[in-house]
Length: 337
Ligand code: 5GP
Ligand code: MN
Image (tube, rainbow, N blue to C red; front, side):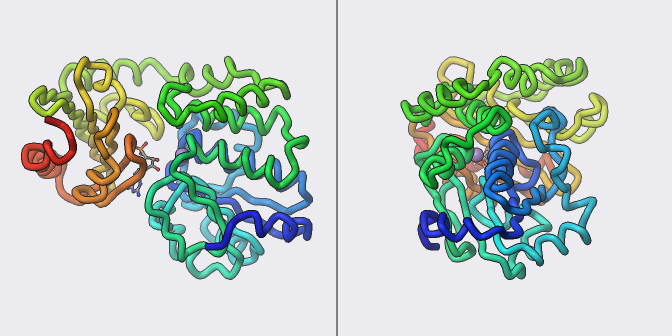
């Protein structure tokens, strides 16, 4: 993978460009993709954003979201666009598997692949150009850097700012995680200077749920959470029957994993959700507890040092058993005792 700086002048040639991101895009994935979309359209390109799957409805307000293709329901059209693309920008994922069914299509696409990402252990051989920096707060910060260092900072407009800010607050927990350093705050100031309405972005993302979701959270915290004080860990498990009973949609479980971290002394929180196709794990931690390695070793996943995800094809009961066993056997290795 060659440095991304090498493509700046080549982008002066109008081209067909596809932007894609990880399955079930979150605010950073969707925000960075759409901000880059606006930038590249202004640059003179023909641009399509393709999401591997659907996304949470709390992202629909983003400028440009109405034009994003959901690969799962536009397979033929999306594949034709991908195969015809000169450039494929891959945002906010480190390995093509994170694009689910899109992965084999990307693998055979002839266009030049460019990675912009901040996850650990990127599959660098898959991309011809790119930037991978685990020190960055978010892919939105990296798209902003891309815009500035390619000499297009003056193109920053309100639409881009709304998209970029969404990813910034999503991935920094609204500026509370350690990655929210001085450059992140300087970037936020720049976004404000072009008309960012930060209150509106927070409301769209955090205050746009239905009553059922809050009732669901109450139920889950009361009945589906186990705390292992000896290992400074808490676990939430969500059976399919709960998802059905509370009519839980994509995005409704976002953020749930963070609640147990508010308990004094808890250093790792885990949640497992019984989805149709797999049991989906999320891990969050504080300080020196490396959940990237934890997810990678035991749950076919990965991510960041303090935020990672994984999966299991076992039943909910069995994967929960595995988690408890792994916790008992490896807690000290992960600084949990
Ligand atoms: P979340 O728990 O919000 O789904 O994901 C937390 C972080 O880990 C995100 O940055 C996400 O991209 C990453 N992540 C989630 N699931 C997986 C996975 O199965 N594999 C890898 N490599 N990363 C994941
Ligand atoms: Mn991200």
